Length: 223
Image 1 (spheres, one colour):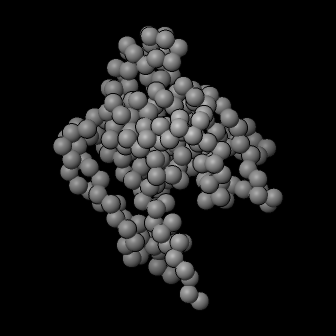
Image 2: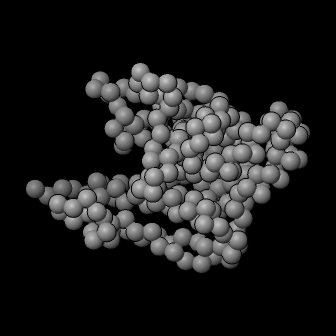
């Protein structure tokens, strides 16, 4: 993809956090391209991530640069500084996540445009009869788009929630008592379900954690 196309995709992914048609557009755009995944070394399959609630996700990346940044952040690099990676079709990546019963696919997890797509939201893109109802090989018309719209949360009047990024106190593995480093409000919509709100919280947690760490490590350290 050209730089201009990459920037357009990033804007789509950023706008997708609002849900509804914006997320449908981003998912359709992703489904038409290839993505990068990280294979396990010596084991069949791709690396996954597990959050604090035990939900597993497949991290996928829109570029090798995004993959490399995540590999550095999560310790996936080999001793020589390399990283195993594979470029596959987005539908193959989505199908793998669905087949392995993973809760989410996470796109560009360390970026500000990071996007989580739930297993239920993937279903309309993977069901054969819905794919065949599209108006063309890359179209998302007919039942594909209507099914995606039904699966993706729609925007309504927001409420407010807070995400906190505390640090654990010395000698403790629990973050519950640490100081608050950053907070961000999360919209709560009238049509939200527990699952759709959980997805939005996870998206905000990813973005908030990355931005907070960047802020901390950009400051000079006094010894």
